[in-house]
Length: 145
Image (tube, rainbow, N blue to C red; front, side, top):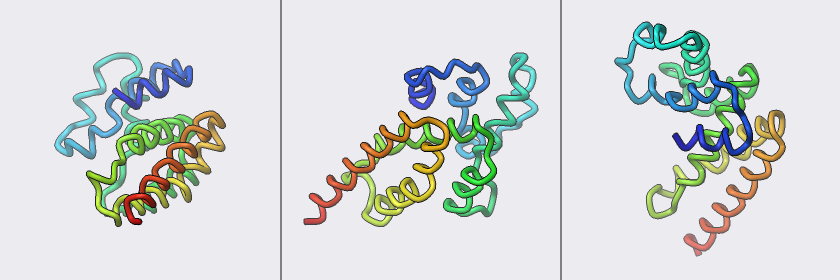
């Protein structure tokens, strides 16, 4: 729901994008989910499921390749959704929860792969993401010192 709220904050009112935001992690988090079970929900269901699959990491795909795929070949909606999701996730990135390796890789992936997407699709989201990254880098530096 947080990803959807972020989209609303940035005035995205596209029903397919908002519905996809709600279930964007469904196929990764609940792999036994069948897309066919979702297709009859409403008139947007096919487009929502297609978008969710587009932002779902494929089996055997490493995280950087997954993010690079979205950056290089993702649709506009997939890119907007990924940026909103990263804003949500980086807000929850706390030193007390994640080890140094995960924390640092997450920041690096955000700078290398997500920020360029954000700069492409929504400069205001890019600014928020930059601010969050900077804040997390400062917090990490304080923790390490």
